[in-house]
Length: 262
Image 1 (cartoon, rainbow, N blue to C red):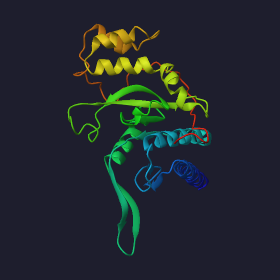
Image 2: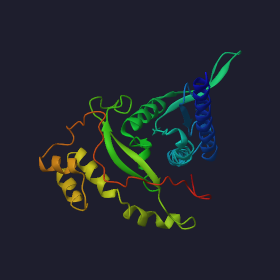
Image 3: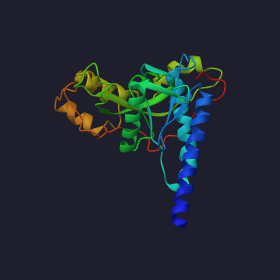
Image 4: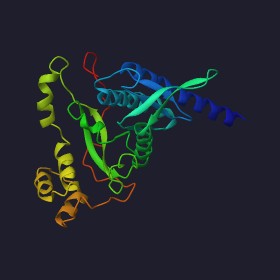
């Protein structure tokens, strides 16, 4: 009886922490929370409230969630996995005159859920689709894998999509951030890793080889495939094994300082 009560209390506390953190992150980034069965919560941006930089808002919220939950879930040795995806959705109130609820339909939700599950498999806190990873001017990403996610690959059913880990916000002065973007991108420690993988995956092995030579410790699997003249356009990594990615083992989750654009 005591063990059951303890487990029940733990589950209630964990879900409470998750809900509280998600609500705070959504409010700070103009998002809308949708609670789902179990310990799964979805936040949608640019649907109910117009948000010009909605993908950047999602990245900011994910880093806020990661920072909060890594600390609050530590006593139970639990981790959080977050998936970020961008596409069109339909949202609004559904139901009858007696019972209604806010709901959303679309590939973004399905993809985000699939990415969160894949993030858990790969032991990655935040995994993003290629559209979210385009926010590389404000955030640091590292390409770490490729997988077939049905709705993401709808235009090319037999192709897999490149996935990236969201690592942190770029460190820039709050008042001078616009003038530091170019310098920050040049100083990106993951830039050549990402460029080499993208060149290889588009079949440009020569450019991939040139970019790879700029890395002090290049990914071993990528180096071997380039040397063996493997065509990246035809190569499929066995799901769910991620690429070799040379990145720090522990990257701090850094949210946007107050006053910066979301």
